[in-house]
Length: 486
Image (cartoon, rainbow, N blue to C red):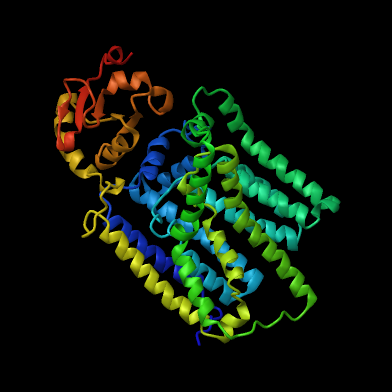
């Protein structure tokens, strides 16, 4: 029987080992960093109150990290992993407070199997940042439900404001908090009502400058969301089928390794009767904790499924990133996993063995379907984009044509950003040649520095120079280039 060591930071050791294995692996099988990371490295060239696709906090956080460790793909890898691991650590801490050490360790091992957090550990985007605020909000609500103080409400307001400045989907977590407020009768306590009002005011003050920015934009995050997913207005049958597939993907694709691990723990615990809690106070405290875990685990997918069915929204698979780990305690409750039976039986031993086996399988599957594996995916994956080879093919002739270093690249956001990452000049990217969505570049910059234009295969004017895979390039020299663009 395996026991949870006392006084040893098992959670920390597990998370560090997990991150070391996965970050090294993900870097080794990718020719190009994730497109979302590239997007953030492009945007952080200027600090704005918003960007054409998303609110600003993820970009601000990356800007701060770049000042410390430099502008590179690894800065985004480390930052994304840090926020993911911090979210998982908060998650484990909350499970330990509610149910105990062994329960928390099994829950963490199951959560590490969710493929949002292993195969995408090197991702840095608004979903990853939102996941941190969602986890921190759950921890703060636990404190509010058990040890109410003004400080928790103030912190919740700050987290709420920053959450909305990271992704508007934080509204789902805010809705969950309001449900807890009503469910546990906090509205009957005047101090708690004042605390909620404080949190709303603080969050609103933090979020308001972005609202003002939104009102001034012809193209902004809301317009982008309406164009890409919220405004899809799918027909009824399509809504039902797409929502069902989205839920199935959440539970039996993204969470499948977690489900398998917990089923094994359930099997290992068969025949063991759970030990009842000693006092009514313990039972009441755990009931509040279970209510919070159920809220965080069930409300987000239910809320988004309702958006799909009732609103015709085109649900995006990655929308589960911030919330999928909270599915784990719901599964644990459904399977009857208990702290006492974990300590008394073989469940913890099984979980450790299953963790090692499942993580090994996931690493192998990731390698085997990569450009280096035997079963490379039929549809080209972004990580296979040959950015280094493209940079070598373009950089020398482009510098010669410009008469100097490459300072601005114009073209599709992800390929142009990937090319910029491979060049020592670290040029800025003019997204799709559009100054309106690239506030870090001005017309004067283009006139002064010249521009390297990158064209996808089959696109571009007749004077484009074609290189590998049909990609094309041409330059517009500085000192008077403005008239060629406007």
